[in-house]
Length: 333
Image (tube, rainbow, N blue to C red; front, side, top):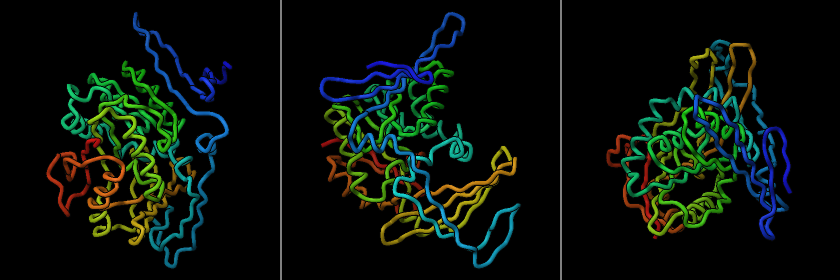
């Protein structure tokens, strides 16, 4: 069956398995150059994956009145909030508000430094085909494609993938973007390497969710394929834990983050509050599982990976207990 809706072309049915692929193919004339890009969305049908793909339940956020109060340009700056969220908070978190708040944090300079590190660890001569797991708005995918890599980015956020498509088009590069729950990867021995950057692993709260992702990545890689994971370092998160932080964006928006860290489960609970220059306010919640290097080593081994190198940041200095980040490079076994 084929159809068209809102600029997207839909088609489905592959053998006995229903699959919906959402093609986004827009063309902009630039002299004699025609540029296009595609986003694929799959699967569709009576499956758990389809339920995940099309269930967009907002997070439920409930705040207690702070025990003590102070005010910073309209924000409560003292006291603590009690934050509750649905287990699928990540289905609605990564929207235009997320991009507006975090894009200045994940700056072009930071992205360029991270991409340089990726290219050092995964040289194009050995790892031409790369899978970007949790690609967001394609900040690494687009740069890597511009440097000659063949990149496929996977993410669940329709909004961020739309931004990724537009920016890939503007950059004049070809990237395949797939809208899919990263726990349900369906590639088979297609990639030389995979990357998971900025703590994309850990959103699901348990080892089970991340194991599903890692096993899917393992299946997606060719024999001997490599996986590069960049995430928070539990030892440092626990030791230097900051309960409250706030900042002002370049656009003048005020952002406050309140955090709680569950030392038993190893989960960081973050409540993000913002006030825009137009006076509008809002709240978001996210929960991230944070692991030690030892826990990562065990988890990766269970999913068929052997860690080969550990780094403490994108300067690629050796990893130790004081490292601010945890980067681990692994091979399939």
